View 1 (cartoon, rainbow, N blue to C red):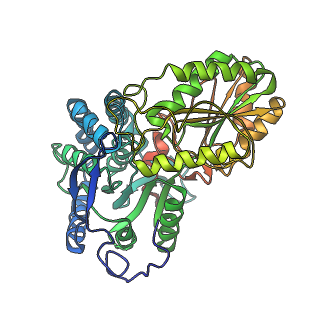
View 2 (cartoon, rainbow, N blue to C red; view 1 turned 135 degrees about the vertical axis):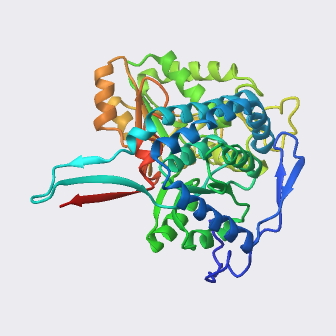
Length: 478
């Protein structure tokens, strides 16, 4: 997250300098062409944005909840109207196929609609039995102030809207620091949200800063909390800094999700779910099934089905390139390490010809590895690319043990024809923040999203996400 030799100088936006980066080139991973450049903001520019965000917050917090929710509800229409524009921009920034980009934006609009319908009810006062001698006791949910949002590149719109809409409906202001290759998406979100009637100017702003400047923003007394989605290293650094400042942090990190395919599972259903979830977004998804743990008796048939289904996936529709050349190098290295340790390659790999229309710098074909085992890179680490790792289990019990043998705990799934058994395993035995039975894990605004262990702290979505950045305020009236 931060340079090992960096030294913090209080009051400055960086480690002895305004920025360790002088420009942010925006490079199209399909073509390797630089289509735009951004320059970091100065200390004064960032301070001005934070000051205006706080001014907007002071006015916004006094707007009745129903009016706040109603004003932000209009963002759904704006998202739908600009879906094609946003999809093309995401394709340029990080390689997402336009159909998937458009679907992402439509999902953002759905989230806005969902919170427009339910959000106000989550923020209502909650009555408690009055203390002896008092007339009433209750809890009131009050906003905190300006919240820093640090978001990743893999879902440039969804991550921003998922955090921002409920947080602002709760009465806060949001200042977004997006990934350095997605400043265009950040600007699009800012333009869309700042144009909504009834929403104060400055309530949602994006800042163009280097990673070395983040601590200074978080240290600023106007900032009351931080939400980060990103790598484990980034999450640890930001959580540690927030903790030292006693500021609230919601940290959503990676995962090495394991799917247990039991002896009685519908193998075609399980293979379909694994392939669809793992190939989506070129495998650059935190809740994708990184490990498919299959009982020995079903392994051979499962391997066959996986390979058949992967072969049907089309470049440009089902998957695109990885985000940049370094990402491709990392995935190729992890696959090579896993094969060197004894895993077998069933499909894909680094030698698949580059598809027409792709420069090849960031392309990595959907890949299937089998005979993966604990101690191998593909089992122990998160591979952020379209790599399906098949692990053999002796029996159902062993399958669950292998699923849980991970430092991460974001999502998990169990496939079995006995739904009651699957539900019991999901509830009691799989160690994850989310667990699905007979389908792949996905996010939805109606359900809390987040993990345990090294997958982070806190929750997004549903009522839980809306209440992360509020003061749970006890009121007693005598």
